[in-house]
Amino acid sequence: QVQLVESGGGLVQAGGSLRLSCVATGRTISRVPMGWFRQAPGKEREFVSGSQWSGGSTSYADSVKGRFTFSRDNTKNTVYLQMNSLKPEDTAVYYCAQGGFVAPVSTQSRDYVYWGQGTQVTVSS
Image 1 (cartoon, rainbow, N blue to C red):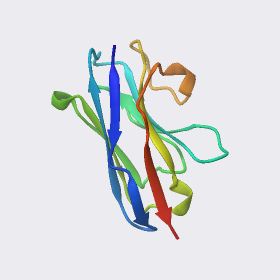
Image 2 (cartoon, helix red, strand yellow; image 1 turned 90 degrees about the vertical axis):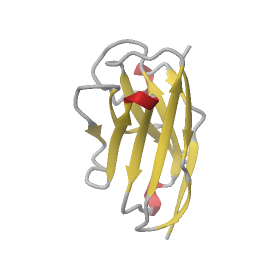
Image 3 (spheres, rainbow, N blue to C red; image 1 turned 135 degrees about the vertical axis):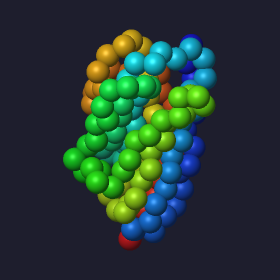
Image 4 (tube, one colour; image 1 turned 60 degrees about the vertical axis):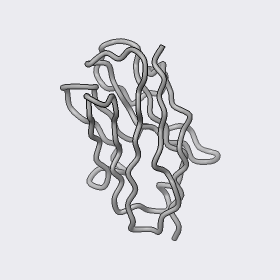
């Protein structure tokens, strides 16, 4: 079974940057969807960005477009989320997730079956 481990969260001042990493172990499939989600206290989990392990297009939530960048290193089974120009509203626990089958990238958390433990991102005003 696939296991996902996120890292790179922390406390940063508004306008700063963080880079999140998600390392996948176990079996992976090149064209299954990989996504980053976040969940703030009292709010539902929301899609941030995602793509397939290889190929395909990258999707971004409107709230992060132009500030966040999704990338991959397939040789390391790792996906990244570069977060620039961070805002206090970006504060949340960030999760990486992987779908179980070859499919287009989905913005719905129910379409992902493997999840990391999450990493906290806190952006101060």
